[in-house]
Amino acid sequence: MVHGDGAAADVLVAGAGPVGLTAAAELRRRGVRCRIIDRLPARLPFAKAVGIQPRTLEIWDRMGFVRAALDLAVPLRGQLTYVNGAEQPPVRMQLPPEVPYGFAALPQYETERLVEECLARFGTGIERGTELLSFAQDADGVTCRLRTPAGEEELRTRYLVGCDGAHSTVRKGLGLSFEGGAFPEEYMLADVEVGWDLPYGYGVRAMHRTPEGAVDDVLVCIPLPGTGRYRMSMMVPPELSAAAPAAGDGVAHGLEGGARAPELAHVQAVLDRLAPRPATASAMRWSSVFRISHRLVDRYGEGRVFVAGDAAHIHPPTGAQGMNTGIQDAWNLAWKLAAALEGAAGPDLLASYDAERRPVGEEVVGRTVRHAAEGVQADPADPATLVLREAQLLVGYRGSPIVQRPTRAGTGRGPQAGDRAPDCGGLAGRLTSYPLRLYDLLRGREHLLVLYGTGPLGDGPLTELAEVVRTFAPGRVEACAVLAEADTDGPAPLPVYRDARGEFARTYEVGEPTVFVVRPDGYLGARLCPPTVQDLTAHLAQVFRASGTPA
Image (cartoon, rainbow, N blue to C red; front, top):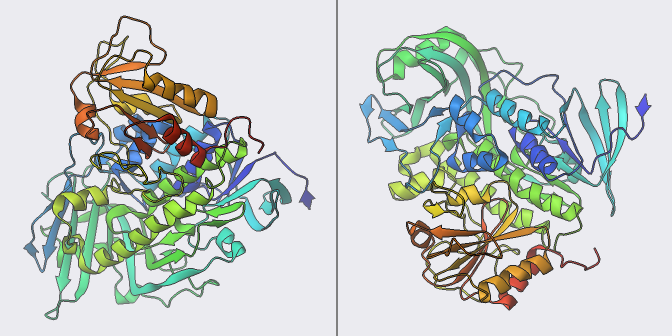
């Protein structure tokens, strides 16, 4: 039975894991008609991906549910490492004070529930038991063939986003290459409780090395909410080992549904060999065997069809990079798709998704493969840089086709175009008796033009630049001023905040009039010093179609 067009949608998101849910929620938040489908009948009750990076928490802040996540999550303060029973120098996950959130751990099913609740606030739910069978695109849209609980359906949509995992139908349908390889080892996961006296909030990595230096046994434990609860990963014992699955695409990655599930005795045997303290495992909630591959697509999309998350990149779970990288893929793509659907996108906006995110995927795949083989301690970076990188706070897009071109480099100090816009505090508002953070100003907004000045706002160049925003991109970019000294009594043509403690000036290393354009994903699209109408207009033309220009 073939149904008609079904519910109208401008975007179909295939896959309702954390990545697909993020894409759908961000599209709906911007008013885009969106459907999200998943072949599973219900959310899986497995811990799976558990590490939540500070950068992801910043995204959840913008999405409006970070407080709920913080109430549920376990803080991750560092990692304790043991090699052949000998304790190694610990890794401390300490971040600079201006970073608003730390590292956290949360079971994947809780992450999915939080994002799904965010999506539901916009009146959209997951269409469960619904699978994308095939699709065909043309210049105007994508025709998708779905299998639903009621039968087959044909859906016409303007864009398709594949967040459908390592065996992605969307990736295969686009004919994207997925080059890489697989690790020969099998692993097992278990969600258990352990009684030991290790400090709260620390992950544990215990290894055994042969005389030749090879790792032949490993135990990795990530704390979860609950007393003594951990998500553990270990090598599979011979009695649970199975031949590699005969997947049609040859990608051996993820949970092995047909494999024999590990029992508590298997987990206990590893603890007896490797645990740094005597420990007894109990209350096992879930276990599975899994395999790891490392692969990356040759491009993140083609025409009106895109891939994100595991559909685009798979790699070892070291450093909790996979799900977090996929969430950032989805966030990056969603605001660009929304602008394209409004007819507001500049000529390079959608193409910038691949230009910005594929190099990130390539770096993450390479780094996690190295860390899986040698441990994070083998990273040559200094400890502070290593922690920032693991937190995904060093991801940047310098050289992107939609960030300020390097014709005017300004002072060369502080965050530049393409860098993450760091948070800072101490901003005084005209109606607030408490200090605000920069991220308070970004919350709920799309592009924000931040005009920094050292004197009164007046009617000078800064207000002329604000007028450019109103005429070039009305309704798409807002503007505010952050001033070293602000007149809070008189009228102002735009919102004004005083840099009361000088934190903005120190964080952004700025001491003269400068314009910062902050994108919806929290990255700087431009840093203009000195700011000119010509340079601001040129940058906005990289991102937006000028108001009144035919689409």
